[in-house]
Each structure stands twice: as C-alpha cells, then as structure tokens.
Length: 274
Image (cartoon, rainbow, N blue to C red):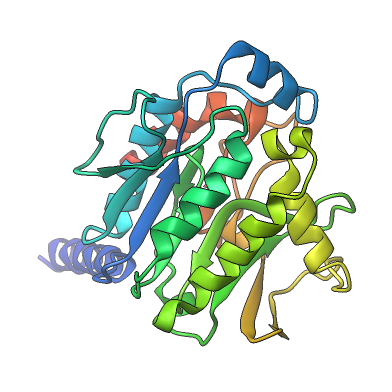
C-alpha cells in the first residue's frame, strides 16, 4: 500500500511540474516566409552557405507545435508576401504584405515593423527552424522593451533567429523596428538579400562586450534593451555536432543550417519526454 501511495505522489508531483511549465499568457509568436527563386538563393548562399529554401513548411509545423506545447493560448502568425505559397498550421493566421522577393531579409524587416503597428501584447519573432523547449514567463515578468540573444562571435554577435518584444505601448518598439528598416534601405543590394539585418544591429550595438557569459541590460537611446545569452534563449550546438542533446536550462533550440536534420527527431524526443 505504501509503495502504491508513493508512486501516486511522484506521478502527481510530475504532473504539477508539467503544469507549471505551461504558460497562460496570450503572446504573439510570429514567423516569416517568402518563396525565393534560385538566383536569389544562390546570392544568399554566397553570404551564408547553409541557407536553404527547402522543407520550410515542415519546419513551421514543428515549430508551432512546440509553441503550443508551452503556450496553448498563443496567437500564431506567418508573415509573407502577396504570392508565396504558405499553409496554415495550428490555427495560425497568414498576413500578406507588399514585399519584394528579390530582397528576403529586407522584406522580413519590413514585415516585422508593419506587424507591430498598434500591437501591445508581447510578440516573439522567430525563425521556422526553432523549437520552444520551455516557457519563459520569468523573462517576460522583467522590465524591458526588446530582448536580443547573443554569443561570443566577432562578426555577428547578435543572432536574430528569435527576438523578444515586450513593450510596444504607444508603438514604442514599432518605431525601433521601423527605424531599423529605414536604415536597411540604404544598404547594398547583396545585404538586402542576406545579412544586412545583422550588419545593422551589430553596428548599432558595437560598443557592447558580448564576450561575457551572462545576460545583461542596457539603456539604448530611449529603449530598455535586454541581452540574453544564446546558451539559454537561442541555443545551437557546434556546427558539426548532432543537436539531440542540450543544456538543461535551455528554453529555445535553434537548428541553424545543417542542424535542421535533427529538428524532427528532437521534437519527437521532447514529446515523448512527458
């Protein structure tokens, strides 16, 4: 009798822990996709070899499934242009903007700022090759306007695969993103295709020390910016390592480049873990 009761108590504790990991917050999770032709893809790959135009829809389905696991009340969006073929996943909403397919990264920045117009609840912009591995309500209870993730990399220390937007009251963060887009318009065409977004954000925050191994906050112009270490809020394994294991505190998994092949299996492991 005692062993049965102890087993029941352990099972109850496990269920309570699972409930604590599930958030009741109503957050926007926002992905972006446009179809790009072979010419644009080749130019993008000249900047980042691992850029691919394949399996995006499968990745979106996996990504949104992971979001709903921890944020069942989340609103899901896919931002795209007028003609790209995009399917709805998990009751997601597709929003189409007037975008230029010749410049996919410029187009993403344009879609981001337009989406934020008059949106006051928290918004997470994220790539399709991401899995949410835990809720991050503790982060959202802190005070900040925008949170970026960083790693110790000289060229592009800030990775834009996920951006956390908390405060857009009176279109405050909308203005940050719109200014970012307007600066983007003056870059070279090749930067508008790929990498220009990270070039600009690196220039903006070039005086910060990203060699540290902890999160930190800073006031920048009129914005309260939080910088989060990628190891917890945007984790990727080393390039040639299988991405099936990760630090226990990791809340976001980012399957960049060749790591994408591990995303489905990792999601299956996450589902079977509970």
